[in-house]
Image (cartoon, rainbow, N blue to C red):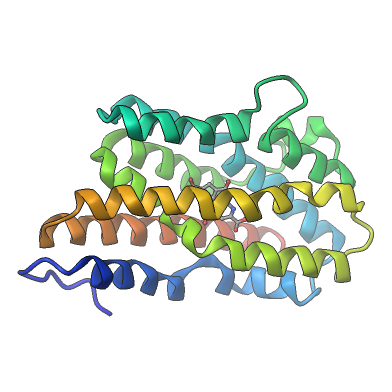
Length: 234
Ligand SMILES: O=C(O)c1cc(C(=O)O)c2c(n1)C(=O)C(=O)c1cc(C(=O)O)[nH]c1-2
């Protein structure tokens, strides 16, 4: 599948197939993830990944708030807002960001060293900031399309859960709660995102822009992994 501009709109099924074809560019195939799932990472490498990925986790609700602020559709906002609550929680001690900090603790990192960004490398910061910036500046349907990497996330999450239990038993099992929660949240979230994107992208041009947004997001995730890989080499 190429991203060459078509002149006529694709059917919904064809459009969804074009989006799904991006699974080939998803970060599950990044060498660092391949080594992670094969049990080949050292403790230091796993910790480095957790500490750096925290910056992504922290910024997801900010990008979802950007989408909410730009979305004129009440029905979409009413469903989209749940993502912010999933990550931030309603109270202290709840939500995905807290769960990620507990993952860090289970892996031997203190909350402080994760929260104060002392391990955060420039390439990860740039990639995550680019994602937030994209959602603040591009049309809201494109911003929603960029979240569609989550179509591919559940398979990776299931593989990661099994890999962590098998290869990294030094991480306390309670620490893996974040991944378990995402196994349910990601399919629900991307089903909604796909519904919005297919309803709004009816022309060849708008479909091409949605595909480009998803392609951009694959680049964000890949660059993030490249930066981590370079910092914690084999
Ligand atoms: O660990 C991963 O591989 C992974 C990937 C992605 C993704 O594909 O963007 C997300 C997450 N995790 C995740 O935990 C998450 O909350 C999330 C939100 C979003 C998004 O773009 O709205 N992607 C992802």
